[in-house]
Amino acid sequence: MSAQMESRLEAQAAAAVQMDEQRTDTGSETQRETAAPPKRKAFSRYFAHLNLLIRTPRQFYSEVASEEGYSEALTFLVTSSVFFTMVSYTYLFNSDLRMIPVILLNSIGMPFLAAGMAWMTMVMFFGRQEGGYARVFSIFAYAAGTVMLISWIPALGWATEIWRLLLVGVGIQRVYSQGWKKTFFVVVASTVVLTMFFWSSAPIISSLKSLF
Image (cartoon, rainbow, N blue to C red; front, side, top):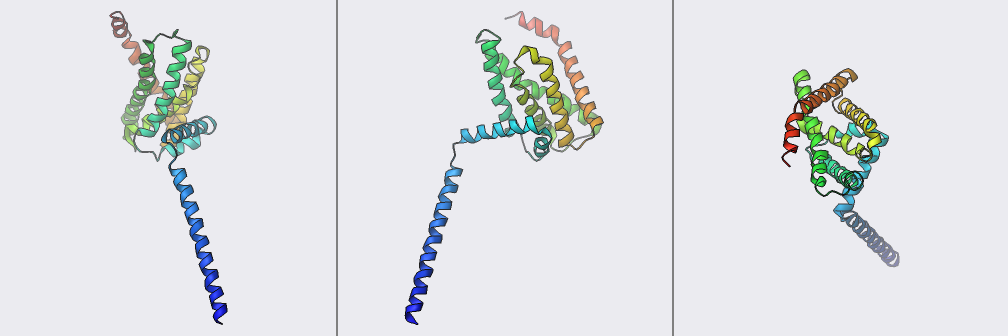
């Protein structure tokens, strides 16, 4: 009996040691995954977002409704804007260094302005929406960042603008669960208001250009 008990105790001890080793291995693997470089993680998230926006924008924007703040969408927009700026600087502006800040600020600033117009339109006609301006900005930032991959090509200007507006429409419809009529109204009204804003400010912009 004593020999059997000793063998059982030895077997239990060996099993316990084996389980501890497995836990240690699993913990080290988890630590290695957690310790992945932040830059690599950021780029992997960027390309994952881009893949969903191109292939299944409805699914992607359904998940945007749970986002909080500006950080995720702004990171995506800035990454695309840097790419757009470098390509435009190299191929369209003959490597003129003065154009780099102009292109970068324009590509980042326009989604902020367009989202502001859309947010004001929604508040005026449909009341305040959940998530506030930040959520509307996320819709426009993801749409603009996606089309920047090819919008620097002059021949595709109109096509990329239509693509951007379609992505915005899908985003508004999925994030706010609105019908297509309300979504269409918000997209068209905000686009018209933004166009009129730039048209009315054209003389001021031209006068400012003459100073430089």
